[in-house]
Length: 141
Image 1 (cartoon, rainbow, N blue to C red):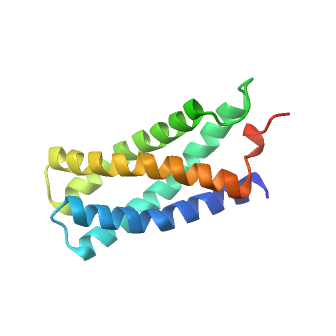
Image 2: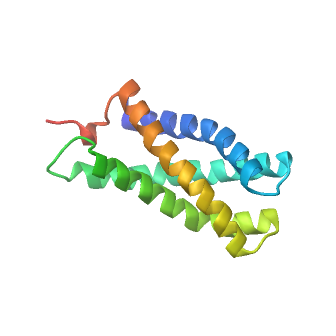
Image 3: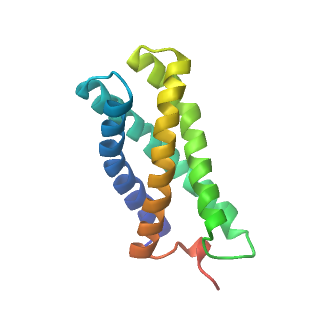
């Protein structure tokens, strides 16, 4: 599989499952309606898919320059935290506006989603690597 194909399959599968996860999470942690939660989740998935593609290009370019290959716990944790941190910066204003809440309230909602998605990102990426193998940037020579 080419690196670009791998990134596209990763992003689409991650975000498809992510829409369901975030819709359910928003229903549980906020006062939003099912429609509001689903639409916000779809917007978030579009933003996240774009961010995922960009972030993984940057991450894998960095990873390719590392002398130690493979994806250790530290490297996977760095990946998950970096991805989610960037996504928070992008999503917080949208969430506050869409749900008509303060930035503080949106940050609280986002904190709940962050916890869920850090775990989801770690597990999903681990499973994806097990199914499709490590990208060239992480394989031992």
